[in-house]
Length: 211
Image (cartoon, rainbow, N blue to C red; front, side, top):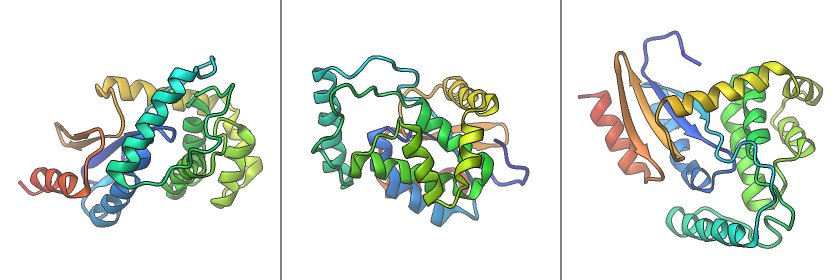
């Protein structure tokens, strides 16, 4: 996951089915646009609810919708609540995380766009992004060969790689998403734990990059 040039790495720990990461999407987009020449931004899959096997309860669904409303109010991101999280839905984020890793292994330049495509499909179109057919179609819409995606997604290498992302997240001490950590030689600095506005993130980055 490390880049070989001398720019610091900005680790972005996230999950495509994390509502606060959806809220943070415009912020990280601005960071990517304005800091591309200063840092390498590396997306790390956090595994928010990886491996869940039990359908959502009514109370869990209500709690999730509560968070969605909070994100909508604070970040201004659009959510579609009608028919979202239907009865029997299993909130397992591992397939979506593995799909992002898979796309990155095929074409690293499309990692972020695919990550955003999953977010948009889940939060604004009520699409089941735990389903392989949906993940494969979204990959194809991002210009990824569907057959190659399907083959690699099911392979042991990508299963291992996504687990390594989850392990790295824990090793870094990340307990919530989104989290940004700046990695300079011999130094790790937390930029934000949880959602924050672009101005605050940029200020924290500038302080560390140009101190």
